[in-house]
Length: 211
Image (cartoon, rainbow, N blue to C red; front, top):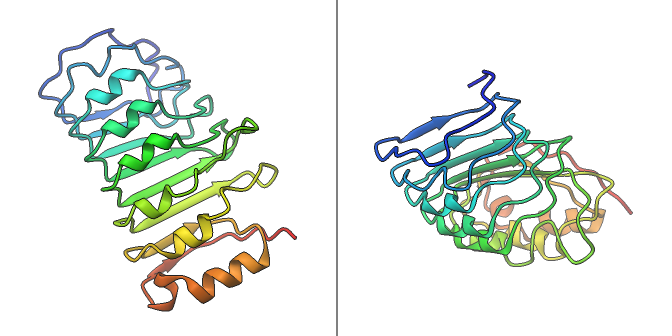
């Protein structure tokens, strides 16, 4: 990590590998398509602060993965559909304030064991996309830590997201969340399960109220 690695082997056989830290290699722009083919026991991957543009489809082989970190990957736009195969994933942190991350794929709804989700949207999403598809957040019933950072000049998330966040009964940390209107904020305070039941132990919310 924090080196000058710019190339990775095409198809390494790393069956015993459980942790892979490559963060800080800012010259690393490509992960070979078959790179994760033989890493079935990998539990933690950190590719933060690299220049990667996408994850390869072989990420579907990381069936034991618990933590995936892709923070400040400024060229990453979204995740591959194969992300849905990571059924044991508990921690997913991605995006950056000045990056291009646009939207979460619908397949992320399959990650029902997620405990911590932090995502920063910085890109301009296509007209036919939404940053967080409706119905996604409410599927993460075990979620304890949530942060959704949105570029103030980008379109807001799906209409139901405030209600979905309010339904998360295990949520204890709401680190950042953007309410598009004062009414949506008031609705959260009035209806949110974790707020009404004093479940939130840490609240660090940056509100950007827009009328």
